Image 1 (tube, rainbow, N blue to C red):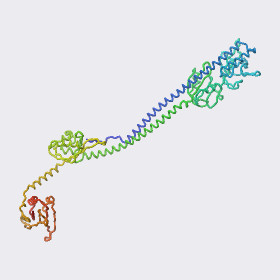
Image 2: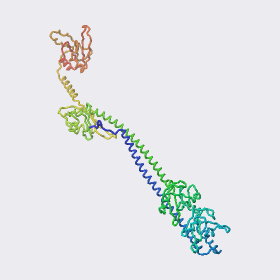
Image 3: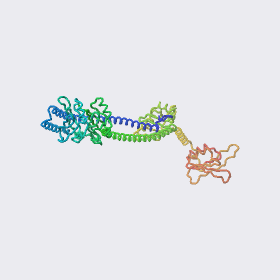
Image 4: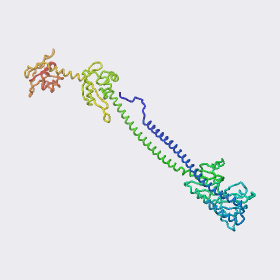
Length: 579
């Protein structure tokens, strides 16, 4: 049966669909955003970890280089110390020999500005750059005081100072000289050029925001490269990092941390290394912003992609919503049409039916079921499965109808005789056609059946009456032309009707005519139209108030005229016949 929406059935309206679509877009956006954030966060951690690893590698390489340089310097200082302690250097020959050794050792180490021997009073006695008439005193230097006071001090590195001979920033690496009795005999010092260390650090590619510094354990800057301020401006100044200080106190010899520099206020990923055997820290920092440059580009690409995807999703959602609304409107219009069709289908006086391509009945309306004597559609379809199964007096007629419909796809005005459920006979007028899908494929057959039993009975009755009239005897066949038939007497108490003969109309070659006074007898009226009569009613000129009526029958068959004569009332009636 036709499917219709039940009253009260809940529908997925436009507002609900729009909200659901917006919710879906938001859900997709949230999922994509979370996935992007997680991916970007992991990328950020990876970039920072790679930056820290790179800083640690650089720190190790530079630390090895500095350690090797310090080891060479230490060996040279040890050689000079041993030479001074072994021989007396007061003789001129020994003095010349020591000066030659100092010059030779300085030439072997490019980082050195010079090597000097200082006596117990702090006066430089041997080394390059000394003038014969000059007296250079360094007894006030902290490293000299430290070595003088501590026989076990070992190798001591000074803070950056401006050399009193070189007149440039240097680091002095010194060892104590002992006299044979173990007392303090002076020191031997090697001056390491800060320019050399700066050039060494500058050779390392650290990017625009990178920095390298050499510090003591108190985080006083010995050498620094990078930043807006030059190396000399920060030499000898402390710029401590709390995180670094904490790790040094915990005994860490190396590590990594992230901090904001107090020198140039640049955030960096730092790696530190305590030089073996030295009270010095090598600190390598890589700019955090530069380390995250690739990650930021990834963020921009991800944001662009996410924005484009979101825009595409919103556009797609808008298109879907618009298409859905159009489809919804079309479906509502279709439902209205279905409801109209359902109303027509259910309330039509004609029987409407639908048949599948294999001949099975799929739908019938109540009128069709009633026409075949069934109480409802369900009762009929439970019993009748195919058109050919309908009871018929004409064997094979409905099966032939079905075959013709399947073959030609259309039947117009076919009359079929059937038998209702109660056994009574009925005539039906059948119209049917093939319904196709939008792409032209056959879908089903649809037809209309009209009960024409009453019309068929009237036609049969008419045929019977005509046949009966044709077979009736003709009473006028022997009457001469212009004969008059006198009327019968009137009923008792009445005068006889006027005796009158009616002559034929001029120009008529044959036929019959009737003349009477007064109104036309009722029994004449049914015969006037079948005989194509011309009825004329005129006012009498001789008898006021009375009417004369004449009926002229053209080409009237004689048997019909005889039938008229037998059936009409004779009062005031005259009939003539002409052959």
